[in-house]
Image (cartoon, rainbow, N blue to C red; front, top):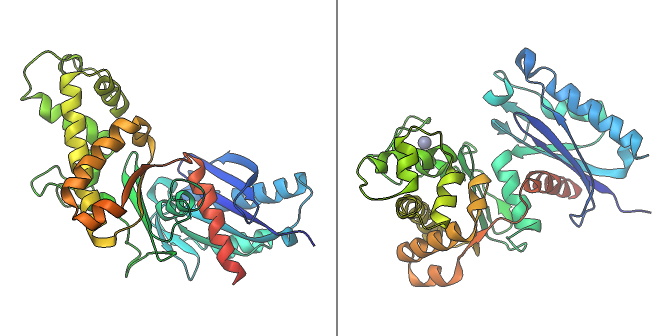
Length: 322
Ligand SMILES: [Zn+2]
């Protein structure tokens, strides 16, 4: 008898990514479809079902070949009911019975969790986490999110909000956040937050700087531009990056003191800044942690890129075996 496979789905606002993996985490097939968010997202789940069935047919597989399907989704997840609510980038305003629809449509057992948690599981299992029992993942992208794995279990909290690292306060008098409070990590360390910090600091900065000049000229800059200029040793860009890394190091230090994971993994688009980002965050992290944590918790860069979601999602299906 051959080993059963697992399937991972990473549901996002623009694409839905799918992968078929072995139970050891090796990706065997990978594909994606566009997310059709029209009609209040009513097409999303039917499109997923149709795509799964079409690909199983294509690969000469059937429902019996699978242990289960796991999915990462935006919005608030009820893991017991298998429903999702409030995923605004999918146009899902009402509660969606995702598990029921996908199991009915495919005949395969289904489970789900939120997208940041699932990415954390992926990096922990097959990426920078080295499959350790205690790992925290921070995603730095259009927003800042995260996931916490402690003693081999994903933490969810009373209302499923555990791991919302983006809303850790790093500056009580800082910028307003979409969550309604001030100075959240997300307001300064997301892709747009970094540009916002640069604009604010540029008002007080005097001295030669390409970054300062481009901001003063009204250019539309990205966080990537800022890190590239810092890499080229633009003095103002270095100052901005230092500020960002201070906030990240402060948040990571508090997380480290609280949870003492073996790794705090930085992922998402902003983490493409690489070693410049990692080393600076790590330096501040050391400043804000006490010695035993400083020594045993490492700041690392994510390794899986876009695949973290599908790999972590698929790993949810492994739990269905129990
Ligand atoms: Zn917030």
